[in-house]
Image 1 (cartoon, rainbow, N blue to C red):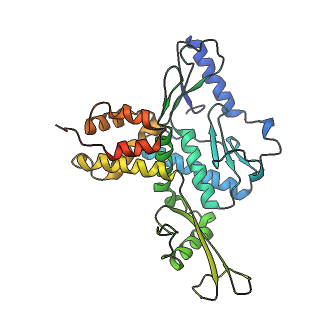
Image 2 (cartoon, rainbow, N blue to C red):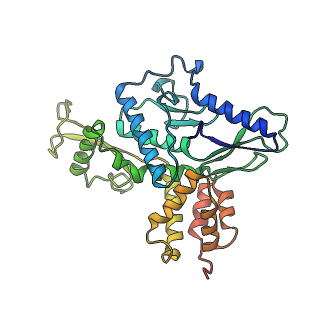
Length: 333
């Protein structure tokens, strides 16, 4: 069983140094005492604890489905930060060099499950660190590989960060419903279905349906003519309803990724029975660290050098989207 998420140390270093580094990471995995979090980290409630355990079990089950070894992450490695003390724009952070997941306090249980699974997939994805070339005097390491993310050996270029996020959130989206059968989610799941039923024809200002398969959870707040809150859903015209939703994350990144899946699947239908089999190839590559099958498929389908070009464009989503839209099928003979 893995002793930390770090599986390999890359660089021109003595074997003893690499072994010691892996031992240090294993120690960090076990030692989760961070003085800087005092006053910011909240004690986990029984509900939060249960959701983290659900997410850990769910991600391990999915690892096994892909033929990979489970990697249990203890509760002590997941830290919930009070909302007012959260410093980032994102709602969760995986920090490989301290072997911890940080989550912003979240009232909605379904949203907490989504974010916890997302960050635990990062935690459980293949990870390698490196001592970059020409940085031999530095005592610090940098990420070499993290899931689908790849870094150059000099540490100056990082590729596929956006694709890695897209694959991760799409994996959560595809599997989340299976794990929301736990009783802790029952009330919110029922409320979601009820809101979606009553307001199924509601649309956003841009004309898009309010509720789609990308909706993570729904919210509805009603007030009567006197301004009193209404809790029971109805289409009574006397009630003014405010209806909203939270979608799965990384919307733009996932849109581009799904276009890529469609582009790959269409000319390869003799090899793959469904586009989900193409998705599974990406998901397994992220979790296992073996990107070669994906790279070969893309270059075989669209021409040698396509995978590399995608890596170079990953940080510029607009350009990447145009590039993928314009991909044409190479000879598959």
